[in-house]
Image 1: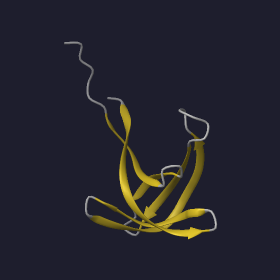
Image 2: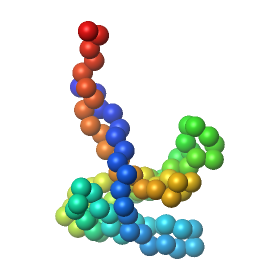
Image 3: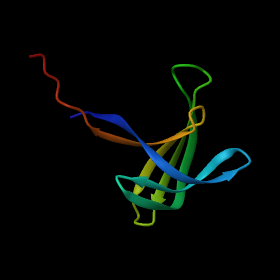
Length: 93
């Protein structure tokens, strides 16, 4: 079964430096708060819709040792949790 990306909007507490929301410190998901212990990786990507759309990805590890992929969209000032889930089986009925 193939997997597809799903994005859930989340609330993130950040360290805000001179470039804005630079480093996530914690986030809330389904009523649970996750403290971020470590930033494992980060990268940037230009969006397909317009050249001015930019996505900032941050791979983090929580205090509970769980790993999450977060996406920040500066033009919207919004954070998203990115995860892969099984896609529904194809049916031509």
